[in-house]
Image (cartoon, rainbow, N blue to C red; front, top):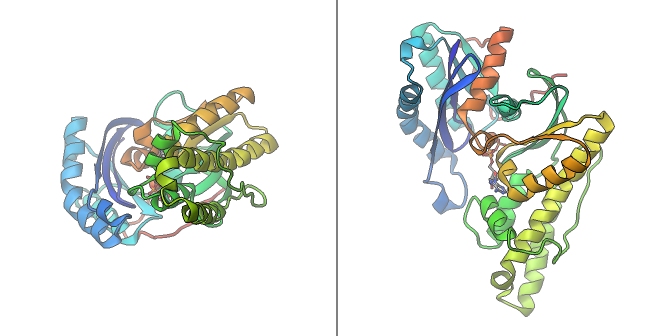
Length: 335
Ligand code: ATP
Ligand code: FE
């Protein structure tokens, strides 16, 4: 089976070609227009997807060396995401499938972030525990098989990526600030400033507290030293990052211990964070875990992860009707 997969849930237009579970191409067009606004502007994202989708698919086909006629199934991100963005990808996928009379596969974006682990070797064994940390989500997911995933816990307010981006904004860093916090943190002292490590019941997270704590802290410091941020940016970034990583690792360790699982991985855009990667490797080694981190291009939004999820759904016979519509929010946990 040769799958054309489309991902358009936020501000990246992506198309991938997956043949029998192998990625032949994975093209991602990032929208630059949002930078000047300090966040993604939904209306502009939809418009840019509309402009990008046809050329992105064409180049994905070219890069894979595959002709349109060779495509045997079409997959797209159905949920969750920005509705206007999702509609562009869904509309394209439905039209392509209808025109060529191909089966259509609707994919849940968060399930795909987890299954990014199954794109390349080494792949985790089951049961596998995945911490998905992205711009909109923070979840601990138990994977019993590719299609049997259960969300054990998630954030009750902000996502980890939001915590990075919002504190970055307070520090005057451009959007998205996560990577810049990471960069500054590499030369900073993570223990210089203390922020509260909050914990929610079970396997849930909360990241709104750290945001408020950092805001109050900065306001306080600036009263006596207006240049406080500029002078201490590295230590502030390192300390914020350390606090977020501690909260993430605490819950991941708790889940691994209670479920007695040693196959552990991270997924989503925040898994690009060098501090999180290092901490996971170090603490995982101490705990005897086998640690999995997908390649960077499969951590942030990409169509290859949609394609691999679609491949498993194809094998399972899970197809969508042409009347399927995208949805901004949708739960997906099935145990
Ligand atoms: P979702 O999948 O929840 O819908 P999304 O797809 O928009 O959200 P991703 O693209 O997976 O999110 O991740 C984007 C997030 O990752 C942003 O918040 C960004 O700041 C963060 N991020 C990327 N690189 C790093 C890094 N090195 N350190 C910290 N955060 C990072
Ligand atoms: Fe995502």
